[in-house]
Length: 363
Image 1 (cartoon, rainbow, N blue to C red):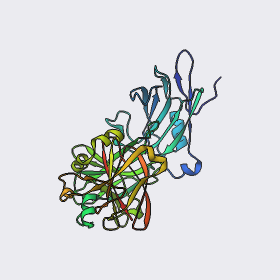
Image 2: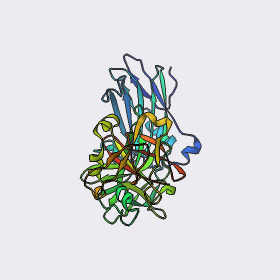
Image 3: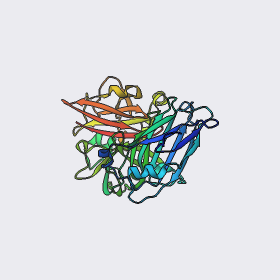
Image 4: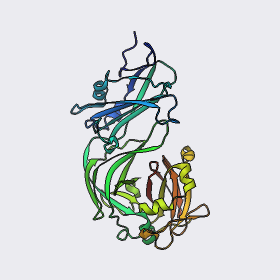
C-alpha cells in the first residue's frame, strides 16, 4: 500500500501506475509571516514531457476553496484528495500549483492576486514533493501609488513636471514561472485612475515573497505595462508611505525597442539613473546569476521624445549618457548592479513577454 501522501494527486499513466504528489509547506516561521485566508481557488498544472518547448503540452484542473481564516495547513487539507488527473500522452516533466483569490471560472485568473505557488520537476520516481512558496499575504491595507514618468524626469529632474496621469494603475505582483523562469504578473483588481497623479487603492501589498516583486500594472484600452515598484530607500518622488510606480509612455516604449533584440529576449525594461538629476557615465550590469536572461543597452533622449513622440536612440559605449537612460531587454526578473557618482545600488527589474516596463534608479 502506498504511503498516505498529503496531497493525493494520482497521475495514472496506464493501468494502475501512478505518481503521488505531496505539498511541502514553508517553515513555521515563514508561515507566520503570511496570511492565506483569502485563497478561494487552487489550480494544478501537470506538464507533459515536451513542456515548455511545446507550451501546450499540459493538463490542468482547478478547485474552488473557501475556509475563513485558512492557514497553509488548512489549505493542504482542503485540497487533499480533490485532484485525480492523468499524465499527458507525452509523459510527465513536472507539477505546478497556484493558489489565488479568484474563482476557477474567472474569465482571467491572473486578474486576481496570487497568494502562493509551487512547482517540482518529475525525475522518474513514484512521488513528487511540491514546495509551496508564499507570494503575497492576504492582509488588506490602504495604499497610495505615485506613478512617475521616467522620461520626463530624466529630462527635467522635477517631480512636479513628471506626474503620470494616464490610464488605470493597479497593485500587482510579478513572480517567475517555473520551468521557464519568465516573469508573470498577477493582480490589478485593486486599482484606480491616475488622473490626479496619485492613485489610492485598498489591496494586498504586505509580505511580498522573496522571489517576487510588488508591481504596478497600467491599463488603458488594454494592459500595456507592468513594472516592479521602487523599494522605499530608492524612491525619487514618492514621500511618506507612498509607493512609487515608474512608467514610460507606451507608444515611445514600443517604438524604441530594437526588433532584433526584442525577438531574442521578448520584452524590455527602460530605466533612468538619477541622483536627483540624470547621471551620465553610470554602468548597469546584470548580475552573474541572471546573465543569461537579458541584455543591457544604453540610450539617448532626443528632444521632445519625453512628450510622447519619436523614439529613444541607441547610444554606443558601456555607460549612460547625459539623460542617464538605459534599457534591459528581458522577460524575466533580473538583478541589476548600478554604479555611478561614486555610489552603487542593486535593483530587481523585469516584465512579462510583449510588455514594456520602467525603472528609476536613485544613486
